[in-house]
Length: 199
Ligand SMILES: [Zn+2]
Image 1 (cartoon, rainbow, N blue to C red):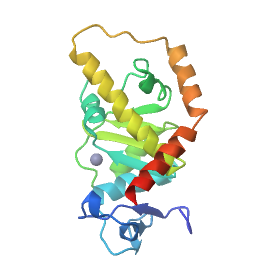
Image 2 (spheres, rainbow, N blue to C red):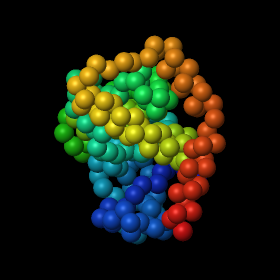
Image 3 (cartoon, helix red, strand yellow):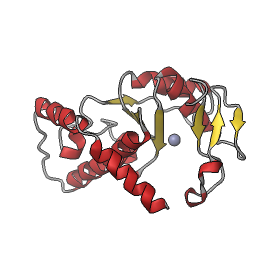
Image 4 (cartoon, rainbow, N blue to C red):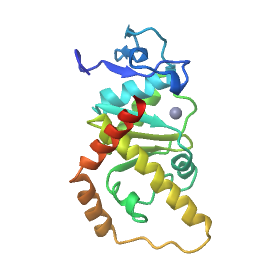
């Protein structure tokens, strides 16, 4: 973040998503002290985001409980199978699992355990909880988050048919991941289009 490597931007507490304007975003330091902004921040968001920024060194950290990705964290595998759909393959070799659900992340220890589980991954599935998607740019992290949910949805729907699923070879999934990540213009254009819609 501008100004200091341990400072980051966080959504304000108590506002509806549709209300949030640029000036509502809060600047906080690694200890959770609000440095600039007109709103408080939600504590579990603070502990999760602060730890992942600091321990895992990620520039953009998105955390959601989006339905299909969260549904997969409730399964024994805890995560997406990255050898099923094409959308899933872009995440091959980029995911990690933190299966140690321990209640709400109300202290820095919870956030640090999640961050350590990430290792070099861009996506971490939090057992019984949700997901974190990271990137060095907001546009890329957001695009990954969008496609992650679509991939999880496809897996849940396919599973719901009761038919046997047919994964591809891991080598092919790895090739698709390289192909997708080698061309991120689509992510940039998608994010720009969303910004136009906001205006
Ligand atoms: Zn959460």
